[in-house]
Image 1 (cartoon, one colour):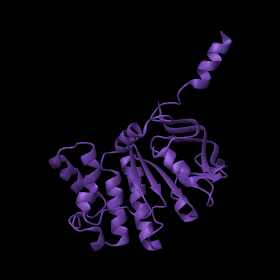
Image 2: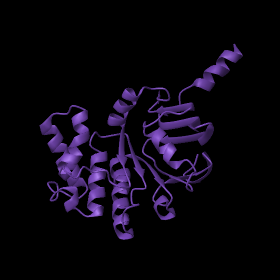
Image 3: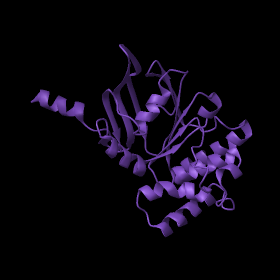
Length: 245
């Protein structure tokens, strides 16, 4: 009977307030006959409403961790929970559905479509969730106003500055009201002054809207915006600074 109870404890799902949890996660890539271990038993917990930074040198596993947390890939070994559900072995189509509803992405290079206006770029994720056109337009206007681009919503990316493009990308990341916003080097393509402006918007989302934000960065200055910094080295979390458990 004791063995049964112990086993139950081992497989028990994480607490409800843990919106993301990685347990002993490995990611191995095969390059010919060589195996490359990008993650080596990584453990990480992100609670709802937190702003955390994942930091580490090149090759530490930051991008791989981001892809797994963002449902862009599945682990070779280990378990990943998103909002209490095991997503470790889901199909690509199931992962895509989760991405569309639960996660918003902000990329270093913005990844906007130059043939579409700012408003159309923000509306795009909502199309895939089959939202009605009037509702898409209303929400896009609200989000662009939130990031202070209400007067530029009909401009195309090529008519906007780098900082404005990144703010469009932030608005787009919120299109489907995701639980988590993943920011991958969000100011990497911007000058320092514009970068500070962009980070202020991410902080605003966290403080005023209660969004959970996971940011990957190599920049010490950016990492300081987070409540907690998780340092990666050789595919493992080796140190935590800030509000750590």
